[in-house]
Amino acid sequence: MGHLLHPKCKTMNFKITIKTVIFLLLLQCIVYTEVKAQDCNAVPFMKVGAVLEYTDYNKKGKLQGTTRHETTAISPSTDGIVNAVIKATVVDNKNKDKYSTDYNVKCNNGLFSVDMLRFFDFDKLSEHNKNNLNIKIDGDVLEFPYQMKPGDDLDDGTINIKINNEDNTFTLVTLSFDVLNREIVGEEQITTPAGTYKCKKVTFDFESKFGILNIRGSGVEWYYNDVMVVRSESYNKKGKLIGYHELTKVL
Image 1 (cartoon, rainbow, N blue to C red):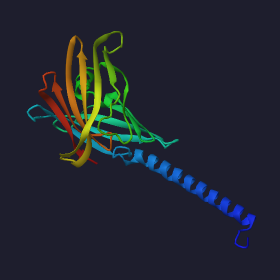
Image 2: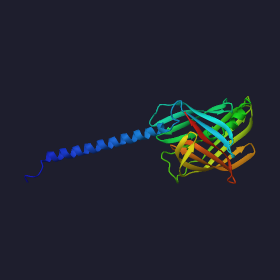
Image 3: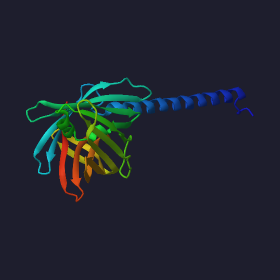
Image 4: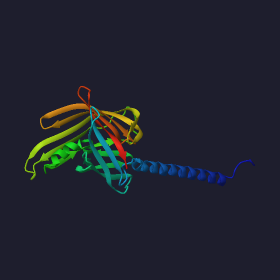
């Protein structure tokens, strides 16, 4: 009997243990939340003033054009949600701006959603824009989940673009672009003039409509940090390379 602890001592030890456990659990939740919130800022383009430059090549590797993506605004983080506005500018061979437009990127606790406009051929838009035509864009967003892994399937996406006459009284032509069957097939290290990146490799099918023309094909893209395009390749329905573009500069 002399070796038994006093009942109050037992109660006190029990309460201290519970408090310690609760403290550790709260600490773990705080650390986890901070790590998740940091994922949005870890991507190079999620900073005001960041510039990603992409160069387009044809199937023979001949330079076709350059597009500059500059982050012009970042909203303050609210409940883990950060929004970015990115200005895409098509630059000609004389380094003069031909066309520019904005698209949006949202990061919700590591889940990125990117306007489908980001994946459209900006050079096509620039061709119509020079004639003072009105361009109306209606599209989905493509999602890039946090910590994507090989074997994951990703959502499809669609974008529709109407080219209207100067006073918007009628539509001259309609463009559309569908991305289908997106799948993460592996991880690869990719080297471009901008550097070397460890990327997730994503394959997909696409269907492009330009007036009465209907083009089907497939593509392969490599993403750094699960969302930043490092290289993109397009193939026709016979599996032959059409062209590609890759990241050539990061500022």
